[in-house]
Amino acid sequence: MYDIIIVGAGPAGMTAALYALRANKKVLVLEAKAYGGQIVNANLVENYPGIPSISGFDFATNLYNQIKELGAEIKFETVLHVDEEKNVTTDENTYQAKAVIIATGSENRKLNIERERDLVGKGVSYCATCDGNFYKNKVVAVSGGGNTAFEDALYLSDIAKKVYLIHRREEFRAEQTYINKLKKKENVTFVLNANVVALNGEEKLESIELEKNGGSKETINVDGLFIAVGQAPRNDIFSNVVTLNEQGYIVSEDGVHTNVDGIYVAGDTRVKSLRQLTTAVSDGSIAATTAMRETK
Image 1 (cartoon, one colour):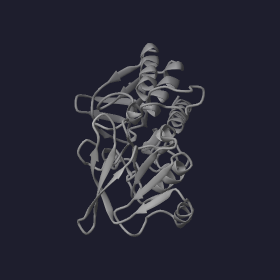
Image 2 (image 1 turned 30 degrees about the horizontal axis):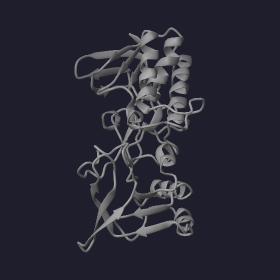
Image 3 (image 1 turned 45 degrees about the horizontal axis):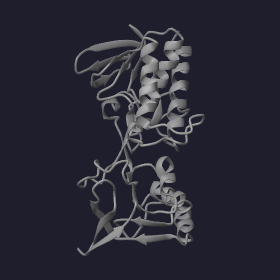
């Protein structure tokens, strides 16, 4: 019997483990792949309070080592099922706890084009607020048509020399207020009815190739491409026990409790307005302290 089982070893999950371990709780962290979550893909993190600059990999590794030194039990197994009795079944074992914290995060949807993964951190990014400052006075493009794409383009328009907003349709999913604001930006160009179909450059991104709806193609020279076509939470396996919204995120009225007593949520996997490293670690600390208080 564990005091707390944490599903996911990203910043939210490992922070939850940190707080629980420091309270001398018996903690099990389950992770399907590798520790760190999305932050390990960030070339540099420069917006975390108190740390002027650190690579995402180093941040995640420091946190991982910190909880290991505190005695964290971390198992790399794939969680298959969680029930209301706090039984957690993986591809290898079944475990039981007084409380479960779901911190599986989400992942950025990809364009799924050649060399996209190779150029991450070398011109391709999924986070404007994380990486935008690297493109001061440079030319960038944003792919997407929702609120995130417009927020990214607005943010980048104050940093970059030129911003292209590329969207596959004529109409946008973004709120009209964002659309109106972006249209007033003199350094922003809208490229509509177009898809990014190729990334050019060897060591770093040099240009992108677009295909228009009619079939014609166009190449645009850019220093950076910010992909903002949505995120996908990893919550299908929890749909039988906790409430999900239409997009698949875990519903939590107060940001930590699910609809099941003893099952909590933290990080990007829940419904929230801002998905950043700072909010992930905040969620983790709140989830752990709440779980400990309520499951003595």
